[in-house]
Length: 89
Image (cartoon, rainbow, N blue to C red; front, side, top):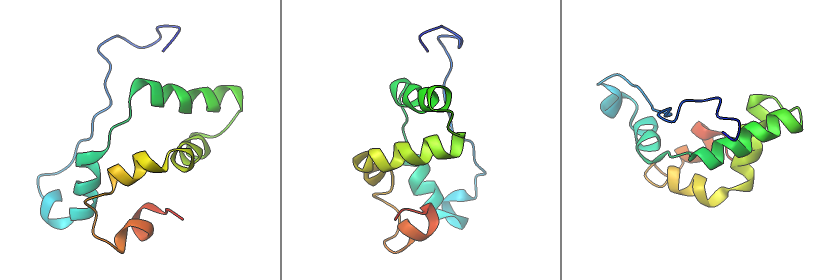
């Protein structure tokens, strides 16, 4: 946030129902490992502004450029569900 648009205490958090651990185990496993640093978010937002990308395309391109981070996020997702649920090719 080079222009200090966001408050210093801003955070990205995941909110889910209590039943997610039983009903949506793969999503829960993903959310427990997901971490996107302020630097990562800046990269995505910079692509949106400078390259006029949609939020979806900027995030998709970030994921494709950083497969090691994605692998960490999905390491506990049941094998076989990783590509199907998270559309990773």
